[in-house]
Image (cartoon, rainbow, N blue to C red; front, top):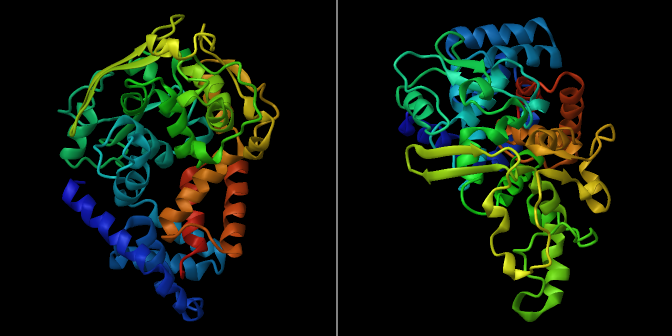
Length: 406
């Protein structure tokens, strides 16, 4: 998929989103749409283009053979076999998660490729932030995948490789095998080259925590602020009297840092050395087992009595207070060491499942869930997602079946 075609698809989907309100006026008639019309709408939502005559006939027949929701799901399953479901729709949904600008026009990278592969292969998405997993492109002539360059993926995209192809497209492997990252230090999407080059570069590694919350729990820090948590794990670089006014710290800074800093400590051994370019990222992922990265000690004179990071142990202070509403898994301890166990904490929350389903619903239905009917649909799909192995492809199919006429 070249950039021009990708831009055309994005533009087309944007136009459809813009007219979603007008389309609602047609619901009375589309509620009684025939199998062909239903099949066409499902296909366009899942693939981003019109179906061929043969595919349309196959989907319409599936709807006819199994009246009701079963037929719509069978038709959606046919649509998700199409290459552009993966190469366009899933790719366009996920790419903004892998970069700070949250743009769909960023180059393909291992973060996006790994999500596409997990969707295609029905890999449980509740391992997305903790597994030793990686998808590479199994096409000859590409640069080798590397923890020092994004060229493998950028070249595959430039060459128009069909990522959905089981032979020459994406191939499942592990980060430990390809990048040499210790298995215990792998944390799914968090430790991909794409994520590290975007969120572990420079800074204090808090960006990785923030963007993981945005991308996978659908909450930015301003919606998670809680000034009731203890302040003992807030690092030295956070001034306790910004501008000479301690009230700013107590009423504002504490709201984020009291919860974020104890959890971002899980990333204490990670860094990305390099630069992020327009086409390929260049630099090297670093993992220094047992040695806290220097970035955790910057600006230590801002408040010398603040917390000095000794290791990568973390604690979730949001298991109490208002952020208990994120639905933390009571079977987990709420603390641990390293990015892998923190990833398990996050991906096991109810907010994680809610976020994935909401994003898919918005992608497929061209609108965020708004009405009580939408909310009920999302709740039903989320329950199915959690009880049936966290298969994200099924979420796409169920969302498309739930809004074929809207």
